[in-house]
Length: 402
Image (tube, rainbow, N blue to C red; front, side, top):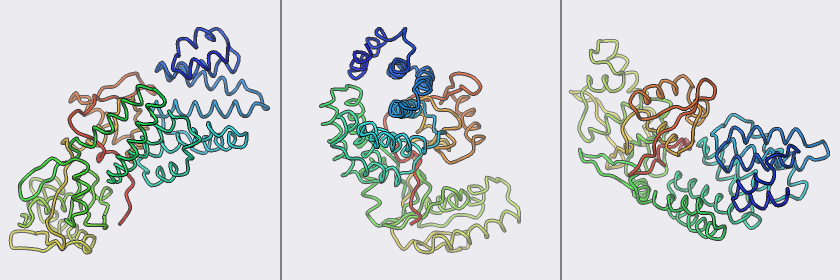
C-alpha cells in the first residue's frame, strides 16, 4: 500500500494516495500523507505530518529522515517561510548524497537555490544552480531548475540566456506532462514581452520590455533606475537603495536634465519639506556634496543661479521608473506571485525591518491593494496578480557595487 500510494503521488493523484494510507500512523505513511496534503495545498498540515514522520524514523533510518527534511523544506518554500537555517537542508543533501540518493540530494540543492532566488541573492542562486547535474534530475525537476535559471537571467538582464532556459524548461515540462509547469513556462515567456519599466527623458515617457531595458543599459546612457535604486552607465553601477536622500536628489536632477532644478524643489523631493529654512538649505549642500563625490565616475553636479543641474559624461540621461507607482512597488511585486507571505518573510526578502513592512501592509490593506488571512502569528498577506506588465525589475536583488 505504501508503494502504491507513492506511485499515486508521483502522478499527482493525492486523493488516490490518501485513500490507501489515510488511517495509518507509521512514519512512511505519515511522510506520504504530508506530501499528499502539500499537493492539495494544506501546507500547515503537511509540515506537521512531515515533522511527525521525521521524528518517527529511528536512528538507523537517516535516509528516510533526510527525505522528510527535504520535503518539509519544499513546503516551507511554498509557504514563503524563509526563516529556517539553510544548513539543515545542506546537511540533508549531504546525507542523501552519501547514501547514493542523488535524485533527492539534487532536489534539496534545487530548493536551496530557489530560496536564494526569493531572497534576491541572485549571484548565489546562479552559482547553486550551476552546481546541479541536470542529467540526474527527473524531467519535472529539470523544468523547475530551468525556470529558476531563466529568472536569474531575466533579473540579471540577460534575455537571450533567459529565452534559452525557458525553451529547455518547456521541453522538460512536456516530457514530465505536468500542466502546472507548462503554464509556468508560458507565463515566463509572456513576461519577456510585457512592460517591465517606464523610460522618462526630456519630458517623454515610454513603456519598455525587459529586452528593451537590457538594450538601454548597453547603450551607454546614464540611467537613474528607480526600480532598483541605482545609477548606471555601461558596466558601472552605483547602488543607492540604502541612501534614499541621495537617490531622490539624483532622480530629481535626472528628470530635469539638461536643465537645472530649483533648490526649493530639491529640498521638497529629498526631505519632504514644503517650507524649507536655512537648516534645510545647509543640509541640501551637504547631501549634494556627498552625491557629487559618489557620482564622480559618471557625472558632475554643478551649481547654477537657480539651483543645481546634472552634467553627464554619458548622454542621454534617462530615468527608469516602475510600471506601477508607489513606494511599496517591490512589496506588491513579491505578493503578486500568488503565495501567502508572512511579515517576517517579506522583511527578510526586502532586507528591511518588520515594522516598515507592517506599516506598508496596513496602508496597502486600507487602500485595497493587499489583504490578510489568519490572525496573530498565523497571519499571512496576499495581493491580486499585477496584470499587464512584469514585476521582474521590482523583485529584490543583491546587485554588484560596480
